[in-house]
Image 1 (cartoon, one colour):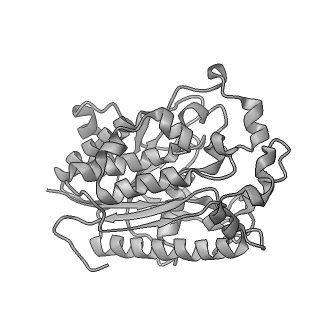
Image 2 (cartoon, helix red, strand yellow):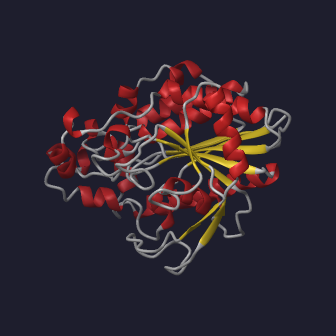
Length: 361
């Protein structure tokens, strides 16, 4: 019988930079298409104003960075204590590996290994580790585990795609950043990785090339159905896929860490907030449900609600929640909610240890 460790993390791109992580909101305030009522800080939520402060968010950015690094170190410690045979990561693809020629709802990337150069043509300035532009990381895969999982899911009625080699990009940032951050202290990442891609961006993956949009850019694109793509998979289906993955891995011979990787509500996706700040209240509601094991809220979510709240990437977490529900793990053993109104998104971390493992946090 296989053993499963459940983890939730973020792959927040700005953690890899040295810049003020509130840079996007600074740029947004210069966009002429931003709704006038949001231009004055006096009209912002009190917490948002506090985080912005008198330094355009620099102090909050510094503290948020420290908090993120602390959480990644805690998750890495859990991973090392579990010592998995491989790691499965649910992540989204933003017009990286999947483009006009193929956009699967779900795809298991059963690679042998890939080489990535995350700083080549990097446009966000110096990286947080001062690594050279040509720095190459080798991410080992677990082809046997990926093939096994694809086979089990297809036999169980989950129509998942699979691949043995990349299509357009060695490894999307959701997966690459997850590995880079779980090895934040650069002691090496010895665990093979099976990326499990979820088409979280759905209607915007081709139309917007998976890129964050300013209000002016969104206005040019519009939300007319004719301009958008087919939708993302339904949240309840992601929940079911996660459950099916848990069943399959339980019957496998491996120890596997399953990881949901994403920040939660993304401000650039929340049209009702002029794409300025995330849906923090929705994030808090879902986090409370996560910690209380309120599966009804999660499983009853509609795709329209996901899109309204900027929860597109949280579809990765629906897979994790479905898996943990299947395993009877009603609450995480450890979790953290990092509230941030001005760095594009709130971030959540969670640890679900195997039932026979109950360590002091």
